[in-house]
Figure (tube, rainbow, N blue to C red):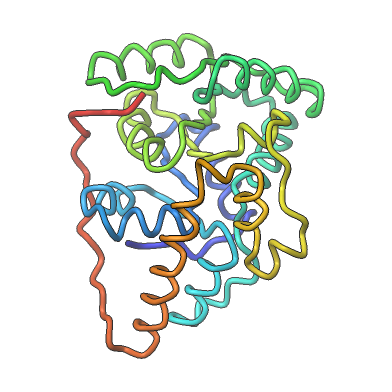
Length: 257
């Protein structure tokens, strides 16, 4: 899969430009879990490679860009931090946002907290995930609700890998930027606590996340992490030469909503 060499400013500038011009743009911030999901699922890898921006979320992905490609990336693009910075810009530029994903309680708390935290922010709509798979009709209905709300930026918090598939199906229908935010909804709603900055700096944010949700996440971190490291070292040693999966451009027939 492909990862974009970008920083916070570049991602936010492109999102805001697309919002002002009312143009589709698909963006996600991907950590090791997303990378390894793409390794094991070629269809998902193709969907990722069809997005406009795949930002490096987490030190291990940043390290890989610099180690393998000398990209010179100075900082990773954390999903929760990206959302916070984008919302501050959206409030300043009077760009209404639409929140889609997570549970009813979380998305309700999220909308309330965001309005308090970012003065002037307009939340055009806040809708929980349906937690099922739909088709073109369901996506068209969601797109209609978003368009009718007057939103200029869409945030999807339905989780990797569901949100990237939905983003690719939704963005062309709403002609707006769509940002897949992962667990950022939970952080900004106060459901999860971010790892201390020092843990993030040393690539240990996953430890804090595993401590908070061990039953749900132990397979993700204890099984996918070593696989990521092994592939990274093998690629560095040039005994593993992966080729990017061709980008998927056609709209998906089945969409997790």
